[in-house]
Image (cartoon, rainbow, N blue to C red; front, top):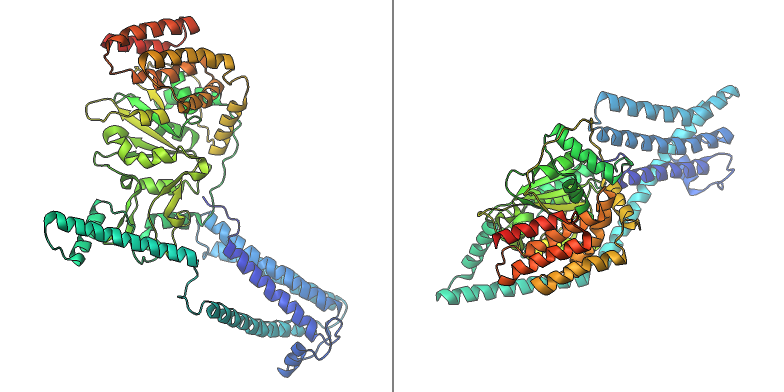
Length: 601
């Protein structure tokens, strides 16, 4: 919901009203018969008398009244604007009896306070208020005439100056260097298109008509997801980007309100969410699964929920969004997805509009709802090749947060895009995360290490054991800013950080895996561990549990599917090394996974 503070248009309106009544005050001083401020026979007074208006002495009450008119009439305009904004905020029409009556009453009060003060003073002093009222009204009339004349004169002068300065240029404002660059890009696109046409003609050994081939290329672009690079002259943005423009209209250029602070801790957030799932949704998860899910957002923008169908992968983000009053936007992946256009859409050459996907509109909406935790859920995301359709996002999410920009479309130079799609580029907001559910069956593709290394992976192979939730847990509407501050506070807590001894101890295991199983352990994974561990501890977990979780999901999963002779022996020795370093009761996930891999060998 948008706030009801003033827009720039409102401020311009208030400024114009104030400038008019300030000009009225100047005219009033010019036509005052006492000439206590302005010189006698000034041009404004000459015009005033030439019209046949009466000369009246203003006195103290006259000037006091004129000043009050400036103040209260400006206040009246601001008040009416505020009432209009308030009606819009409450999603009600302004032109109803309630709001019009409220506006009228406010204006009448301001008029009474401005005009009434001086006239009341004169009445008390036994002087007739009629001459003063006549002077005030006459001054308003003359001020209006002069104000219109000066405004027309200023507009004409500005128009002459601007058009004379740009006399040899088309009627639009632009940067010359940028225009030349845009024309060069168009020429390059045209040359490339012509080259492709020549190659296609040579391939089939036919002399294809250029116009017909261009039409055919446009058809292919519309049906198959054209790039939209050479789109020519587009119409208004409400037609080209109907969905994104409607979001702009909905928010009127303003961000949604920030959430109230809940002052909840991460440990209570995890425990309450687990109890809420059990009591309200009859879903039962291990507490460390909940901790890993919530902590994962602090270590990576991509969370992969992997496991067999029906284990609650899709339910976890859905009900977490419900629990904290966030957004979980579900996007079922299709087997036909091959590139970025499947996610963000493409330009249709026939209709001259951009085919906006729900995914794109959800990403765009997050640019306004910056304090709303936003999860873009890609359901069954490995039913198509992740490295194909999600490649751009995999790379972009590695950049610094201010450089996470996704190219949507190459726009014509003079096209005015939606507010947050400048130059055809959309910024991925810090509050946006990508939660991907992945099934393990024959209908899906394997997920490469490129994807696994960038994500936090949570496995859902274990059966959930029901338990009784006695506590009456309510939902906690927490905003992204507050949740992010909790993450940052956990990472700044020295008690939660990995010590030098912790890193050396853990490195003995990772070095062994690298040397004996040829599984790499790069800086990216180490950085994720350093981000994940303190938040996992703040969620109520233990340091060894966090290391165990990441070691199993980030390292040991890369050993699955390998059947060399040395693998079994190396895994048995790895199990002994883990026990030596951390004891029998630690690293249970890793030990179970090692045992599972050995059984398959």
